[in-house]
Length: 227
Picture 1 (cartoon, rainbow, N blue to C red):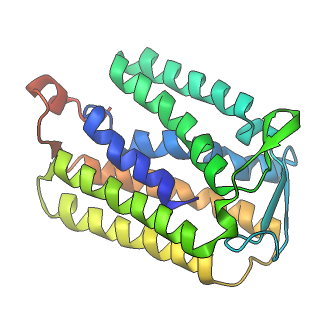
Picture 2 (cartoon, helix red, strand yellow):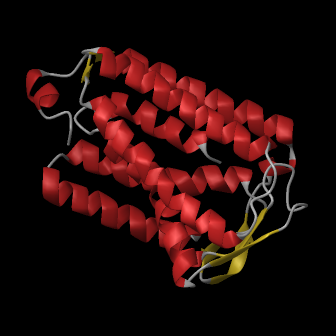
C-alpha cells in the first residue's frame, strides 16, 4: 500500500490539528522510510518476483525489524514517546503513535502472508494485492476519503496552501499508478535508493501545512499547528 498510508495521515489532521501533516506523514510511513536504509545496510532483504502478486513484483521475505508486528509496536511507542517529549501534546503523541501502527494494519490487509508477528514463526497477510481491482478500489477510496477530511479540517491561507497541496496530491497519485501499472524495477538496490526520496513528501507536507489553518482549532492550537 502507498497512497492508502498517506490517506491515514490526511485524515488524522482532523483529530490532531496541532500536529503538522509532515509529522503525520512520517508516522504513517515511518517503517517504509526506515526500510530502504535497512536494505542498503543489509539488515533486511527483498527480491524481485514479477509473479508475486497482481499488484507488486516484490517479495518481502525478510523485514522483521521494520515490518513485524513486534517491530512496528516498538517503533510506534518510540515515535509517540519522542513526539510527546518534544511537543508535550498528548493527543498528537497518541495519534502519531497510532499512525505508525496503522501502517502494519493496512499492510496486513494488502500483503500476502509475509508480515511476521516477531522475528520469525507466524506470518500474516490477507492478500488484497492478489486482486488488482480490489486493491485500486480500497486504496484509491481511502486516499480520496482522507483528502476530503483534510480539506474539511483545514483551510488554505494562500496559494501555497492550495496549489501546493494539490500538486502533492497529483504527484502521489501519479507515482502510485506508475508503480502499479509500470514495469518491475531493475533491482533491489534501485528500490532502496529510490525509497529514500519519500522524505521529499514529508518536507512537502510540512511546507504545505504551514500554509493551511485548522478550521475548528482553538487559538493556542492554530498558533502551534506546525508541531
